Length: 406
Ligand code: C5P
Image (tube, rainbow, N blue to C red):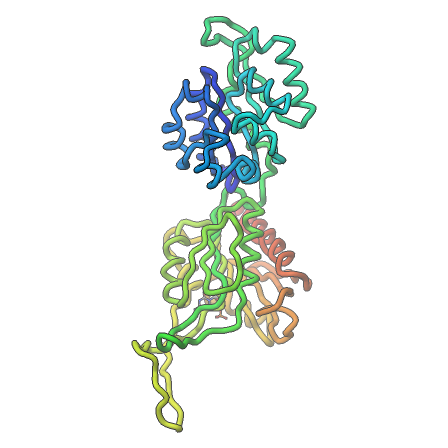
């Protein structure tokens, strides 16, 4: 189970012998789906090299408070803002003292001072240093500040002594960090969504398209992210900004959209076709701008585009749970149900586009969720609210289907 999908973890490494364990910790956090960036204190570099941490995290390691290059890319404020969780592991007695007393004289201390996100500190030190009243007072102060302290374990220490002070075992740290997040309805699932219109070129300057704004697809991408999913959004041209953590693939034509979808949908858990794909495209695209010709008009021969949703729903291997949209102006449930069958879907979201205040280019939507076993109406509300309800309906159906299989 990917318990940390979409989560951003800033790992602070301070200078203790347990610093070598932060390499394994980075890997295991990533295995759970987290994106990890690393800040190292000066003394941490005596125990493990920034190069090791850079290679493992896949990002340059942040080292100095006044490194102009790093500051301009991502300074202490940006790093603090970027993170969902800041995890200091291992945390030395000295770092804990500096954090507790509000120092900001190196990068990690300054990041902690600037942070407003969830904080986790995993101390590791000699047992006498851990037991010392000053350390315990500092740790208590951090607890009062709302910092989660992962108490060190008892055992044989690198210095040869036995007692409490060993860094909590790495898998336990990962579990404790994962437990800080409520698991979303689609935690660890991969969702692929198409959105927006397609453009079918007539010549280098003209195309056939439609009024789809992309709002519903983008709102669904956001709702899927919030539910803990990893999201790939394949989008035709829109004026929207994609949510921060989606993998965005931009395309123009239906054929490009099909190609992009076939790169990501096989093997995904859920596919939602929201795009208003042009049903037809010009048979040929003129290489040069077409000149005005006779006054009698002109004819463009159109040929049918591939049905992207149907192609995904008919996959023999790696077929995801397939969801379509049916925009209709009459006989809503009847037409949508036929589409569900014809395209071999698991669910179809029917919406009435006869009313211009909902659907296509508007901010609101009113839909009916239809599956083979039933239907439920989602009353008129914003596309954001409708999206959360659709995601909940998908999660519920997916869970019911997998229970049936088991
Ligand atoms: O057949 P119709 O166009 O009404 O079907 C709508 C559904 O099918 C939507 O989910 C749309 O994204 C999808 N579709 C598609 N490829 C097409 C046409 C529609 O994926 N060429």
